[in-house]
Length: 80
Image (cartoon, rainbow, N blue to C red):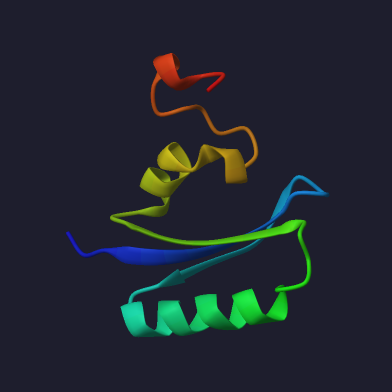
């Protein structure tokens, strides 16, 4: 199964994911990540991550803290 890269930009102050962009091309994903880092370099409330997985569903399980009302991958991880 091919890997899809997801650029996530999370605003900690608002508690909200403000960008969620999928990329099939790893180079384009890294370029977008670098541009986002430069754009928000002075804003400590913005968290930028680039993650890869087989689907958005997998990312929502492993990085659920960026998404609204997403259950943890495991009940043992709840509250961690």
